[in-house]
Length: 210
Ligand SMILES: C[S@@+](CC[C@H](N)C(=O)[O-])C[C@H]1O[C@@H](n2cnc3c(N)ncnc32)[C@H](O)[C@@H]1O
Image (cartoon, rainbow, N blue to C red; front, side):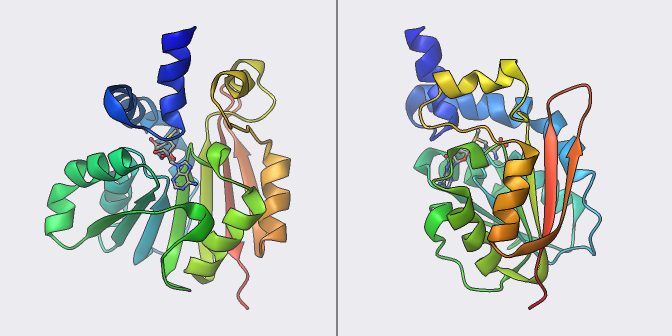
């Protein structure tokens, strides 16, 4: 179990050679789920997007392609994730359409009311307290801005719930738990979607207008 546990733990904060391998795996392995989740976004094309826990940066690129008029910002607390996201998006960065910074979602160094859309793919499992972190997301969103969470584990499926035993500090949430934390943190109009055949979930909420 040792090497498998060490490898799986790289999902929480990638570092070193195993982290590089995991980032490659996440960029490829999460693409289908991310595309499925993002298909539920029904918003005016956002100008400013922040992808929280951006990992290897694939979703930054996908969002920039989906919304060509946007500028995308990636945030991750792993220096390796930041480096890999910058490498992956170097063309967008050179064009002034993307930036990536190291930071913790619990204390973002981003200005208030900056973003039209915030996304979080496969990352909230590791955030230190949903309500506190969601309140930070609300702070950096413009009023009526959108927050989208996409997870491949729905909190009920036994096969994905077992990752809590393998990955240190991981917590898999049900849609109901996510919805409750969003409402407490100042969001409204919360909608959840379930894949049906897979335990994938998407939760989309709006920051209150005022
Ligand atoms: C499982 S990976 C997902 C990466 C990417 N979103 C994707 O879908 O491929 C989780 C990422 O969230 C980052 N992360 C976890 N907790 C974080 C926190 N508190 N602040 C910022 N990043 C965090 C990790 O460093 C890691 O890169």
